[in-house]
Length: 119
Image (cartoon, rainbow, N blue to C red):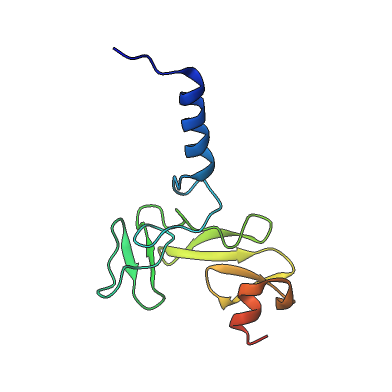
């Protein structure tokens, strides 16, 4: 029987901790088909959870904020509204451009927000 080398186990764990999507505990964009990610095309379904077809995102009805980060804790937090995720933004940020992402009020400070607002 082969014995795993301690450095190999440590390297594998480090890669998983730093590079694997593990769900709601990380401020990271979720992959399509899972809560926090886009619905899978063309039929608008999710591998896990339900699809909000109007806004094209997957969410977990039991834990609607799972996978949603509103752009990071410095920008805002996810709250549950009408049994679906929503963002409550910090002062200086807004969620009018994207309902589930807090943009700086000065959209030029964020490429995603500036492009969406035509700036």
